[in-house]
Image 1 (tube, rainbow, N blue to C red):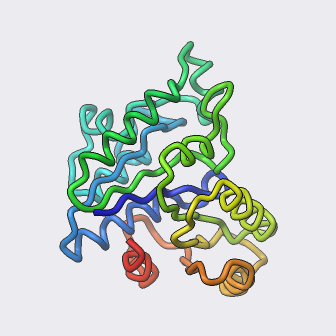
Image 2: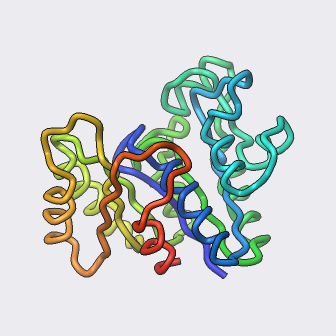
Length: 224
């Protein structure tokens, strides 16, 4: 039985696409897979199917209903901001202790594979004192780190890796998800990051339509 935390160097670099693609590949291999994304900002109930929890539910073969969405994403906020700011707009807070407990209960209930998708990048604030890094540290699960291929990603990725390793967190693999219109070639970005982090696997993932499979998902499945 395996649990893996999917995080990123920043927001909107492809965490959900990677999580959903990995879940689909593992299910195709006969694995029993569960996935949760406990915290979501920018959530529109009228467009739930296109939301991050909606994409994950579709990958798991579960219906996208209000109940199902609430089951995997209990902290949902409308504003497309960091969770602490989005919650404040609604007069709410992310209860960090409850978030950790929710995650641990999902870990305890897993039959085979559990994928926990974070929110934003590794240092995104969850409340006035805690970040995603604190959440990952509390769970101490192996990590799948997703980065973009935009100009500047080398510094962002290597900085994130340094921070994660200083917290003694294990990075199982790194995925470089191709950024649109980047002047930096995907394969060169992958090769550069790989030079600095060996022996951690670094995989390149071209920009693909939602639901598309790729050989990189098969390689990721090998680390689960």
